[in-house]
Length: 286
Length: 306
Image 1: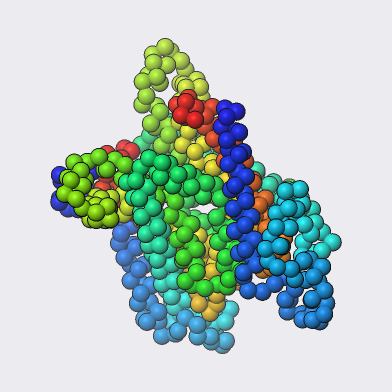
Image 2: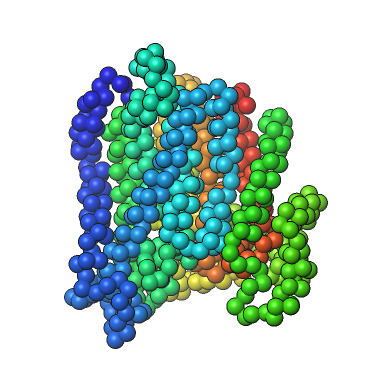
């Protein structure tokens, strides 16, 4: 990324992204799923946790668009409500990992020398730890708290972000505009956050887009193991778990949450690829 | 090479110590204890049990004692099943998880590498699009969706394989396939990207000019460089296989170590939790070392830097 053309970078990138059909389709799918998750629970005449024992295991019909589960709860309301949970965990946990990873990476790269070597050594060591085990341990032992859920996931997923930010910082650190800022006597904090950070936005956005699906997957794994959100609340992971258990009687219980989840992951991955090509044309493979 | 091994082993000691300490205090500070089950035990028995396992002593004494025993390789008895040593429980459950992991891994490599190679060779033809499309779908179809779907297709509908359990060969098929296909998808993508880059190198052109057959170029010249990204991925993949096996064991009701671990955490079986965490950590450290050695063997440049 050249600092000289940074003013038009956003516009250029948007034009390139618009030319990428798969990325645009993904963007629309994501918008649709996001809007459905936001407004779906309100559109549905049944609350997500309202039981109706007269109408259990109904296949999709006019009243219940996605059918009902073993307690007669409306699957449409549950799936869209689960979307709220899954998407917000995905976004919040990614935000946590961004804040930790970017700060850590910038400091490490900017400080350089021995500090950098030690900080990266630590990342290497952390990389080799069985984090999933710690997350499971945390969730089991300290209760399934929503806040804890995304803090734990975010604390696990920051390592790659730190590496990417550091590599980028090392490249930029020698640039003339940083030297100029230093010559003007600006404080390190100001140089880091006002001068360096804006030039790191590209790779950060790309990697964040790719972190969201990873985080959502982790949340779903936890919910699937029964360690994530608890009934009557729902997330896509917990709905998929219920669906998998009752697949023979009511396949739609797996089908709808499963499709929403897979479609979201699919779109996020494609959008991430598209953004990478758009923001950094040099790195694209083909 | 031996310096790499030595420094890594040296580094493993503080790492394991940090893990042991972290896990020890995490389990102790968590609410609940191993003898607070729903069936209330009489108070005096609980006190007796706790003093038997040294739980009534100051926390730091317990910690020091645990580390001492650990140095002698003693993980202690399970709190929940006092007649069992933790190491015995791990020795019973781990072979199950290991079989699952190895089988899945073989499936992933057997499908992923040839798939990716074909896609790279026949770039931009249907032989590229088909495997890559499938692998994109595979990456986005998590094991806990794929597993139930496979059960539905091959067990409920076709009645080819049993849907759950872990008794014989036919029980192994669906679980290993579920876990293996997910990684096959990743490996295929990495292989394709790596091969595409390598096939453009000058030394491949040289080999071709010298009249080497395209099979020989592929297996002998290109595979070495082209598979490097795959090898780099193996480290995270091993860690992923472990968390993957947690899910698979829960879908197919397999009595593996993952299931033991989650149960132990629910039961507040302190020694079992600690033992399993340390076991997994050692395993991952060893596997990462092996990955680095393979990488050094494949890539002369990485060898020099280390």
